[in-house]
Every structure is written in structure tokens, then in C-alpha cells.
Amino acid sequence: MSTNELPVALSPLLSLAAEWALPTEAARKEKRATSTMEQLKEFYDRVHPRVVEIGAHLDRYPMGSLPRDQERLFQLALMAVEVAMPIEFYRLPDLPPPAAFPRDRFLIATV
Image (tube, rainbow, N blue to C red; front, top):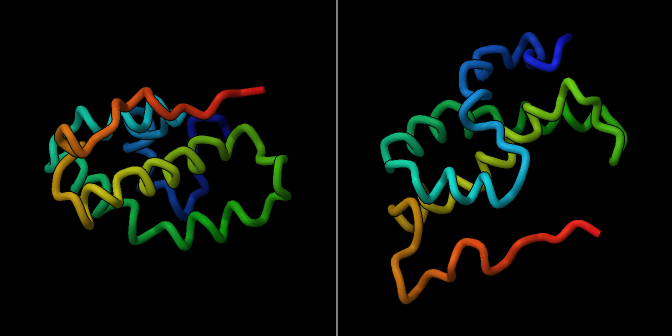
């Protein structure tokens, strides 16, 4: 399997990977906040029903040793988590001020 492919059973999600499989939390937050609700809902509707299946597939790999060709699938799952709150609760891509913190206020630093 090349780095541009997902497992065969999850291959219908491949068309989303180029746009939505983002490598950092900051990139995922930015994508969420700058997407329309229609875009977020379309992504959510396609990926959310498959999250358990994605998790089961990725659980086959020991913690910390995810093969490179599976990273995009993991990134899609992370994006699904990022998109869930706006779809399920906020009904907005990003919280409006004053409720929202600046998106770059809390970043996970690499050590």
C-alpha cells in the first residue's frame, strides 16, 4: 500500500484525504474554522459513520509505531474529531468572540 492509499475497505474515504488529512492540530483547527458548515457536514457525514471501523483498523498497530502509509487514515480520524463539535453542538465552524479563544492560543508544542 502506498502513502497515497487507505486500506481497501476504507478506500471510499481516499477522495477526502488530500483536503482533510492534515498533519498538525493547528492545520486541522484552521481548516475547521475556515470551512463552511456545508463542507464540515459533508466531511462529517462521510467519515463519522466509519470512525469505529477506522479505530479498529488502526488498533492493529502498536502505540507509537503506526506505519507511514496509515498516517493519512489517522489524520482523517483526528479531523473527524475536530469537526464533531461544530456539527453536533456549536452549529458554527468556529466560536464567535468573546466565547472563542484565538485558534493559536493553545498549541501542542513538540519537545
